[in-house]
Image: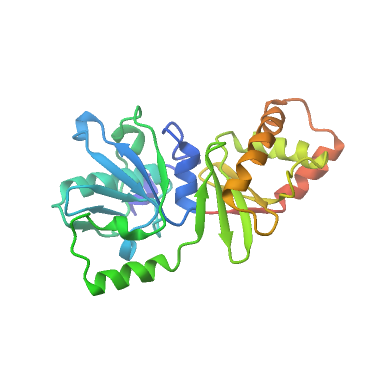
Length: 274
């Protein structure tokens, strides 16, 4: 298989602007877009990175010429960056109005870090609808409207916070959560959470730390919020909690016995997303 020749990369998005947001859009955000651009060598093409595309397409060259690249795909090699770069380059080559179909995994080749202009910020917009799949001048037929509405029904209400980077409020049924993707080394984040947890400082303003996801080499801690907490109500307490978290991240001293016990408990609560 071609995938056997692609080396495994623990942090495939390392070196890209907004690495934690790449991970968040790949794993925990249902509908969002973000900005990117290819290098001059690859045509300086504007790219709309998105969470998911219809029919599981990995990429789409929309009828109006916009390139869409999906992060949430069903299979991949050991390097998500290589897979996505292959999908992106394929989308550039096909005619407008054409989707890139899922296919064989790529062999060695350029990665996103080689294909994208790294000076372009990865600006995320959480979307309330998948209507952005369509070009603005697309005639909205009854069938298209129904398909979009059916897809929209599965969107979990999500808001990206503005007070800190890469943090997402989400409402799942009658419960609210904060999922905050971290840019730091996994072990550094776990040590910081363990220090706070041992001091009973891992929560804030009635928010309880409940565990974390691991994906693409990064950690996404999760807090369950007080029932009914809205996203805008979360901005201030998260901003106040951030310096305490940053201080714990900066602490490189050995963990004491309480923190080591807390860390062992944290590891038992991890969920690895692939």
